[in-house]
Length: 289
Ligand SMILES: O=C(O)CCC(=O)C(=O)O
Image 1 (cartoon, protein in one colour):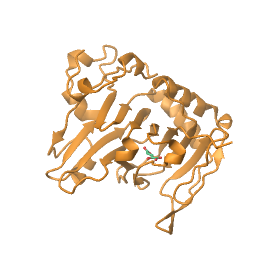
Image 2 (spheres, protein in one colour; image 1 turned 45 degrees about the vertical axis):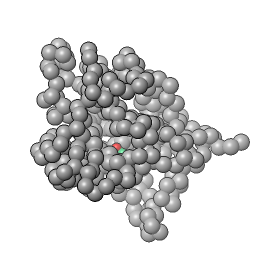
Image 3 (cartoon, protein in one colour; image 1 turned 180 degrees about the vertical axis):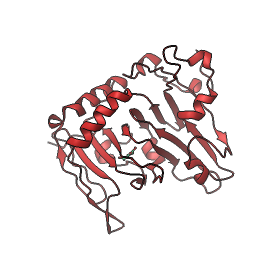
Image 4 (cartoon, protein in one colour; image 1 turned 135 degrees about the vertical axis):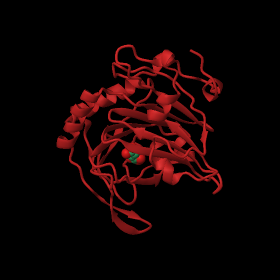
């Protein structure tokens, strides 16, 4: 298979064999979709409202990508269904990897039900610009012992133990297998009960906690939601955004300079009527002894 475009130019490309999904049907493909300019009607509904006329938008995953794919090269003979894993070079050392079918649908519903019923979800009050707000989603934090304490927006979540939630360790193991060399030791879980719940634009820049180039692995279960990345410090005229429609059972990894140079968000969606649970794995530094 020949890779063209920015993938071919990237240094230190990971061999395809190291880029794997536990989902049986998974076909691992790196695909550079290029930048689609001035597209108006694409698979991601958010594009219609967020895109500027002279801006540029990059699409990943889902319908638009399937349309571009030469079937002879990528069709799965078993099911006719194609699963595409995407590695996207965002430039300047920022990179995102997206695996839409990391877990099978059945396994993902098993995890969803477990998380729904067993996780002690809370909705904390956070402080933004000195004002108190109820966080617009429910959360729960898991962390190994001896790590630096997580504090965000004036809130210090209680760190639960991995030992009390064995399925979370199982998911963590699969994530580690997919990205050899990764050593995540904390997990921030988000539960979006409806399309009215969201996470606003932010980047996880806590150098003292995560170091200068944090890796964040994000697993999603339940209702599909749009996940956006937009470049920090860009002019008004050209807006570069990426959209991933995060599927049930998907895995998305952000790494390199992504937190330094990009913001991410999961905006409100009127059409998203059911719950979504998201798991973000991170590596937190140890407390000084
Ligand atoms: O729900 C998601 O996909 C993103 C969550 C997120 O951005 C975060 O926890 O920092």
